[in-house]
Image (cartoon, rainbow, N blue to C red; front, side, top):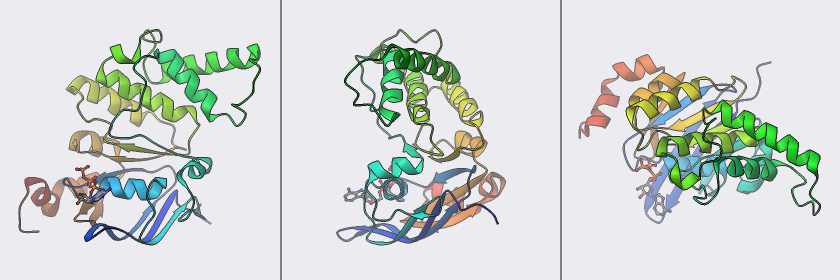
Length: 251
Ligand code: ATP
């Protein structure tokens, strides 16, 4: 029997007043898959993420994570299903160092993080786990730098370290390459390609090069609906995708 998909959406719909931001979406993402979600502005990509992560409740339809129906489960409990996500806008603290940020993320991911006494063993363990994470995202040498002083690309690397601190089974990244210089984009692509295959990765990405190099498969949204799903090659060759990205009216 094949394992349950990491994400299974059925007839998922979300309305905001008269706007249907996500319309009757069926979607399966297999465990270990790298899936890119593409689409022009306003297509419904971020709303779809918010529905999967539990930041929004659907108007209709269902969300399953690893075979478990989480449609009515609040966002913080979906984290226990192995889900973590990043946002379009960074939510890092500028006044902390890289090392402190990762340390706090590790602490926050532990079940017992309200312990009143400081335990030197725990601190050492987090310290070395933190150093390993910092190295994993290519930030060694920047551990003592303040978040507000590292580059935009380095902040994105740090966000990935924060996401990995919770040992997730599913990472959802909202436009990880937005605003990055070409060299930074290349580095981020390599980091994403280097993630262990037991982590499922779903990303919204406007940069086609990043999206199509990282993804095994692509879901294209338009006007709240899924309009095409395929391999990166199929997406590259699709006239519909080109029309949507060129803003043609003939779709
Ligand atoms: P972008 O690429 O610009 O981030 P997107 O594909 O992520 O776009 P969404 O942000 O999901 O698109 O928006 C889909 C539609 O839903 C848009 O028409 C948007 O204006 C509307 N929408 C999204 N969130 C809300 C909200 N909280 N209240 C009202 N309308 C919303």
